[in-house]
Length: 125
Image 1 (cartoon, rainbow, N blue to C red):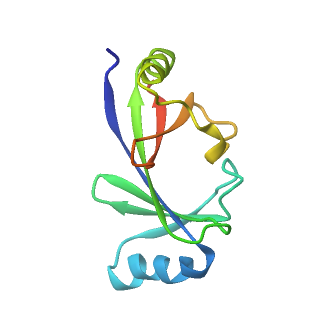
Image 2 (cartoon, helix red, strand yellow):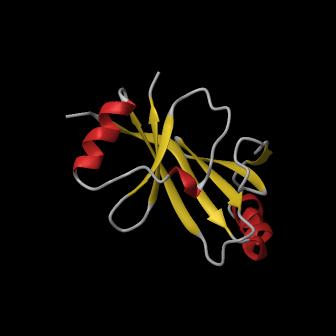
Image 3 (cartoon, helix red, strand yellow):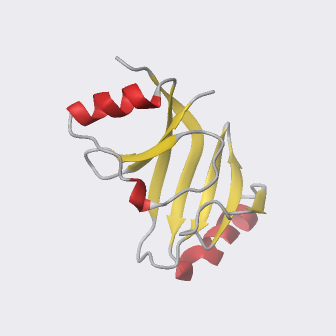
C-alpha cells in the first residue's frame, strides 16, 4: 500500500465578495503575516495571499465564480502512479479539471474525499 503524508498547504477558496474582508480578518484582526503572492500557475484563481498558520501555509485564494467558501488540503506520496492506481481501485479518481495547474516542479493530481473535500495529491521529491 502506498504511504501518504499531510502537506503543509491549506487553500481556502473564497468568493470575490468576501475576499477583502477575509484577508483583513487574518491580517488586521488576528495579526498574522499576510503576503500577496504570484498566482500565475493557477488560472482559476484571481489573486492569492499566503498566511503563516503555525507550521502550515494557509492560502487565501479569490475565486470569482464561487458563491461560498471551500477548503482544500494537500497530501504527499512517494509514488503518484501507484497512489493513483490504488485510489482508483476504491473509486477515487483524479479530478484535475477542478483547477488546472501549469508549470509545477512536481507531479500532482487533484482528488476528492467521499465528502467532496478537494485534496492536492503531490509526488514527494
